[in-house]
Amino acid sequence: MRVIKKIGFSVVMASCFLGWEFHHKSKTATQVKQSMIEVCSQDSNCQSAVNNYFDNCFDSSYDLGSRRRSAGLDGDKLANCINSQAGSTYFIYEQ
Image 1: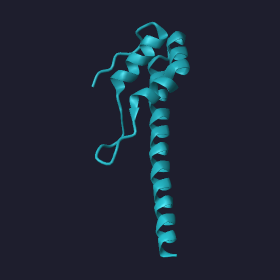
Image 2 (image 1 turned 60 degrees about the horizontal axis):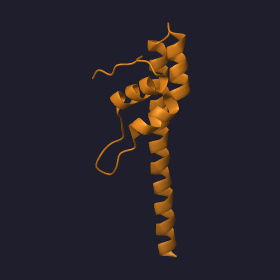
Image 3 (image 1 turned 90 degrees about the vertical axis):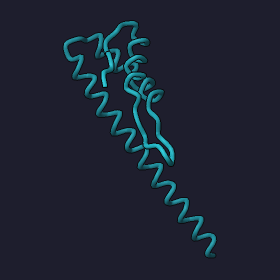
Image 4 (image 1 turned 30 degrees about the vertical axis):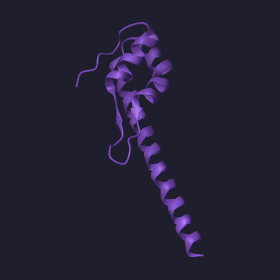
């Protein structure tokens, strides 16, 4: 019975950890997309590019991390992805 409790506890903790990681990713995606929409508020083509290509580009440029590395977003990769998908340069990433 003790082994089952330990396994159950481990499953619950792993689920909580993964849930937190995906919550953080979703929160970051929302904030970044909102910022990009604000940057191109005067250009409807730019807004359309963000709305059409953001999700795929964000997924390819966001790293959930590992035990030794925290999660992070590669902003340059995100900007380049949206630009290349749109066929026009809307964003230039500066650190």
